[in-house]
Structures are given as structure tokens and as C-alpha cells.
Length: 82
Image: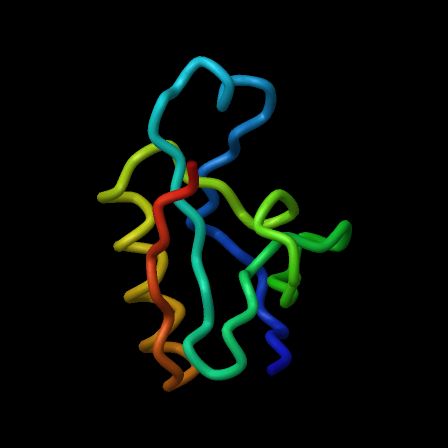
């Protein structure tokens, strides 16, 4: 799976994630890989959930998953990280 889309709906989690007990990531159902943010700010598949795009709220993760699914026509799941 390859995504080539600039991401206007980012939910940056720079340094603040450790303070939030809940963290969520997106996982593509096709292939089971997590979705991360590449250095060029495009969505990329990543194997390691620690490199995944992290959301601090479930609502924000669900919104991003719906938008990505609508754009690419592929199902995206929201996964709670522990």
C-alpha cells in the first residue's frame, strides 16, 4: 500500500504523548501495517507501532481514519496503543 497525500488533518504529538495515557494509531486493514508520517509529510506504511502516526484522542484518530478511507477507498482501523 502506498499513499501519496499531503496531510492537512495532522494531530502532532511532539513531546506531549508521554503525558497522555491514551494514544491511538491508524492501521491499514490491507496488509496490517500502521500508518506513519514520512519526513516529506506524506503518509507511509510502517511495521512498528512506535513509528506510527500517534493521536492523543480517539475522536481525532477516527476522523483521520474516515478521511483516509474516503480518499483512498481502503479501510483504516483505529488501534489503541498501550
